[in-house]
Image: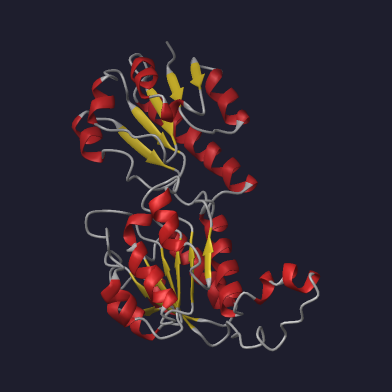
Length: 313
């Protein structure tokens, strides 16, 4: 049995660093082999996971020696934090490691949707079409209000890039105090105010009982006609059917969705979004690049090694 169990993709370099002191079991499909995982964690002092591995109280009961969980990413909705706390297990997310990748994804999809998908006309032009008039009704980013819900590390990275394009940043974060220095060059607003005045709204909050269903039919109706919604946070934050309805009706001008209530997406969710106009769908890859994977892997392994050293292991 191994000291450290890795259930999803981790860059090879950091794995070798772990092996210098500990025995390591790596199986990138282990998240989907529950009974095998339960056996392997029996002797483990550390567990390294991404977002697919369900770390609940039942799994932790099988891991009496576990001291630390390294999260390859920042979302913690797949980990029972209360159960970890009760067992004195430290959970270490890779805070900030994928912020650049997510921010660039948000800006890229913002520009595409503001220009009414003009950048996606390759197949039509190659087929001999010339939809110049149709695709000439897009908007510039400069001068637009850019709304950010959740103004932590990733939200601030997004804001900096939007500001560089000449956009006015309006943000909502229930945890940032009014005197925080981040408000020096950003407008602080309530959730409803962000929805009502912004041309683009992007979500960067965790999935918690308070944020589940945060953006539903009521909130979408409050958004400006023609506004754009981007979600790279968690799927459960947005009511998917209500979003599809808002796009079909023409109330929203576009949406970019990278996360879903069920992942991988199932047929019922796929049916909701099928043939919906002005919509970009991606398979939870906003924060995934070669560079971000390397940073996430390094930060996670460093976190795990630090905590094991602190525990005297």
